[in-house]
Amino acid sequence: MAQTLLKVSGLKVAYGGIQAVKGVDFEVREGELVSLIGSNGAGKTTTMKAITGTLPLNAGDIEYMGKSIKGRGPWDLVKEGLAMVPEGRGVFTRMSITENLMMGAYIRDDKAGIASDVEKIFTIFPRLRERKDQLAGTMSGGEQQMLAMGRALMSRPKLLLLDEPSMGLSPIMVDKVFEVVRDVYAQGVTILLVEQNASRALALADRGYVMESGLINTTGLGKDLLNDPKVRAAYLGE
Image: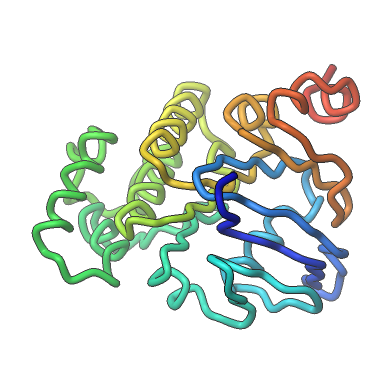
């Protein structure tokens, strides 16, 4: 069995005065794609923010590569190979596409490798190449999502966290996002995917966790959850 890359134990997080995460345990093993699904307000994004150090923990611990990362900031974790594509994309709106990608590589100093990776991102997302000098703030939501994913990949992550990557996108863009997620995973990057499109997320996942009201209430193989009558009724509209 592959080693555990991320282990979340007894996680409790308050957000805006509300106990949003109430004691969550889960793990992501090296080489896996794990999906965390649940209804809006279940605590998924809060969990992701706690893992990446943008929200403080009330209780519990988060271990990455066998060491606690509790209290460490996101800028520090990127150096360790942990990168996140946040909900809402978070691109630098007044910077060009190329400048945004370079920001993803700020921890690196291998100029040839950086240039090679920019070329790879442009191959994955030809639309970014076409508009490489355009300001990110003038792009469509789908294009910004491409850019946010490309920027995260520029850090060469060991673990990539994706928070609602398909939210608000057209069906064509949703297809593209999931195609890229599948390709990145196939290249050996471990992925934790938070996604409201439960059917697409579970279809890709090795394993999944179902979160409800700040707690995980169901876990299993992605294919098993996809066929679970309770999960289908609650999250797949059946």
